[in-house]
Each structure stands twice: as structure tokens, then as C-alpha cells.
Image (cartoon, rainbow, N blue to C red; front, top):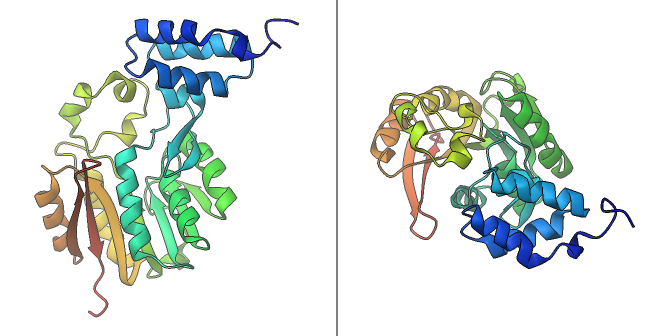
Length: 268
């Protein structure tokens, strides 16, 4: 049997753990189990271990990330869905209903829309991102749950017929201030697309563009949901109010997450 066709299990678990630990991986044992379970050959396994030891995010090494119990395909360079963002989907699930019209802006891998559709069952799902690499990845996650993914800047590629019909608008906008991007961990700063991280001078530039148009796309009573930081929340709430939406702040201490729900009034 050749090395390329032998079972990855022939490579000792302890060997993988030792290599990962030496590279500074804090959860070396857990990561070793995932890599061993994902690798198809010993040669592939060694390549994955080399990639992880060199600093590639674990999710990019594996080719997937776990998000709300789903295995989300994640390609190199694509923003990795964070566990704290599960709180945003949880809030959306509480608001939405089966059959809802859902749009996932700045969708990245499409994790938010795919998770919401998985929780609710039948929804009318659309997603969009400006990054073609992310769009290709999102299609693998969103199309199996019946959604459609578009490439373009925010609302620009969406069908015009959606205006005034959107019940739930998910927008995982970048909110890191430009000057702070350099302070992010290397896994994000080096290996994820900057467009998915950099929110402009105060971190709220993309949000401003989203909220400015949200009222035209939301159905009466429909809601925009986005994540921000606790520090930025007061400014984000003011932006939402200034664009005619009704903001509500929700927080999860467990996930260290801050989500703002911005609702279009049911009556003018």
C-alpha cells in the first residue's frame, strides 16, 4: 500500500498533537482529532498539519466550519463564521416565520442564511457578497437549502422585485475600524479578505450604506439584524434611527455578542 492510499489513522495521534502544540495551537488535541477525521490520506494529513502549523486557520485547513450544528464549507480567504454570530441567527429565528423572505447581505460563506433556512424550514432565501471567492463558497452552502447567491455590492445585484418584500435582512457587515485591523489575530488579519473585516474609519461605514437603503427593501414590520461591538452600539443605534428604522439592542454575555435589530415601522 502506498503512502498516498494508506489510512490517515496510521499517522499517530500523538505525532499530530506534538506538531500542533509546538506550533502554538492551544487546543492541539481537539484540532488533531478534527484533522485526522477529515484527512483522506497520510500525505493529505501531513499537508494539513503543515498548513495549520504555518498559521492557516483551522477551518481553512479542514475546508469547513461548524456553525449552529451545520458543517459550512469555507474556502481559503473566506471569512470564517464566528460562534458569537450564532446569536444573530438565534434572534432572527425568533422573529421570522416559515416562508419568510430572507436576504443575507455581506454573506461571506453564506452561513447565516443557510443556518436560518435550516432552522425555519421553507424560506425564500437570497444572499449577496462583493467577493467572488466568497460567492463561490456561499453557493455550495446556500443552494442546497433552496437559496440563490448573487455577486455584487450590497443590494446592487439583488432582484428589484424584492424591494419592500424582505421580512428578515441579515447583514454581517464588517465593523472593525481601519486602524484596528492590524491588531487582529494573524488568522484573521492575514488569511481572511480585508473587505470582510474593515469597516472604515469608525467601523460603521458599511453599516451606514446598509441602513440607508434598508427601508426600501424591508417589508412593513420587517427587520434588519446586524452584529456590532458594545463600544459601537450607541453610534450604530443612532444611525439606525436616523434612517427611519426602530432599533432594539440585544446582547449575549455567553457569546460576547451584541446584535441590533432595526425594524421598519408597520405604518408610516
